[in-house]
Image (spheres, rainbow over the protein chains, first blue to last red):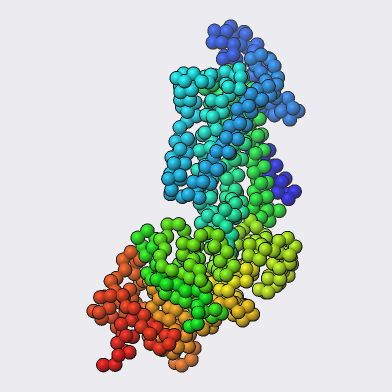
Length: 307
Length: 322
């Protein structure tokens, strides 16, 4: 168990290092922050001073080296725009993002899983076709289209809900629904196919053959097996709690981490972008680690192989 | 036969236009061991899955299955749940995947004990342990906490048998119980089934494609071909005087234990597709004795002597000497 955990932890660390390095390189290749932040017509001396102040003069490998040194000592740098600690800028946005993504996750789980199970249990029936049609629609329509559509109907036409901003809980409804519907659709499809796969297994027939009532076959024999593949997808969803709202936050002008990321990228605010990416990588990796542990709890075959 | 334990009458199964069973009449007496043989796809398994309501919903089933005084076809789920695992238990071909991989063995056996005998907790565990003992699983107490993937194929099948015995069934349907196991284990499982039948007095239906397996374990044999029973006889009688050309073909394909060596005779041709059945006798296209009359109508079973019947026009002719 300890070796299993240690191995996963090492893998997690390597993943984070790779994400951060990749971001570092790409950001620095994609434009000069001094130019962008100071403006195109800034005097050359000012730009040179800016570059000196932020250490952009140094060769890339040295910047990289310094950057990692700082991260290891807990310093994630400061925003080039207003000089505040990048980490503080990002952290203060997290509650706003979670206020959207956590309720959206609950919608995904509460709608997607029961819908998938129902569809599988009534395979090829009207219910199955209806659920799958909605699910295909739900996950093929991109969230910015769905978001705009909802704004058009509920804000512009009906005037029931505000179209953007963060003044009250009513402002959160449309963005939450936008995210929840798409995720529920994905989860419904996954749950359905996982259930169908399991329902076709010989042990389901065995359970019926020994007189287990169908309800108990579904709950006691099918669901615990179908949970194993479904947990993977839920893990991804949990992992994207912080980063998953970039598009929706932009559509609904919601001041969360996603919006901060868009603005910071546009401004080449290196420290802020890197801080967000580090956070995103860390949550994703943590979610994956939890999924790995859950696999072990759900599936005795995996528990033994990895223990 | 005295009052049968279970009687199938005119049982037909159709999977969306492809008939799998085309009228099965079969009865099992209390305590008897009946073998059901035929090549794969002939409907042996489907017969018993249909009788117990274990086929998927798209199968259309007609006819009658009577267990004692109760009709099972179209019976309410609650009645079927009481019968399955209670009065009639069934075990399957692939024991390793027939056990639920995420539940411990003990729990899976105890579930049947709870359903059919009301045993819970420690009482269920003690009885589960006794059952594992009875089917010959060593160290039964510890094995209760094992997961299916920790067992060999033979042990898995023993657990399946223990689970089947949990409801004290009057009939055990064993669907190719040894096909997935290697030969020495096969013999052990067959011996076990025979011994349990003697101990408990339950009837046994052994579904197999292997006439040899059936002849060792069963008293009576029904031979199936293309969704129908073509011959039914006591085992000795069937081996001594096979009447249906298909049965003769099956026996001809077995290597003789004594006597001179001879080439094994394969039956030429293949089984007809379910949606392309020949008119009349389904075996006629492969039959060495086929005549024009064979295509005219489906031959009914002809009693040759008490307990022996064959669905063949030649059998009918032989009975009426010219």
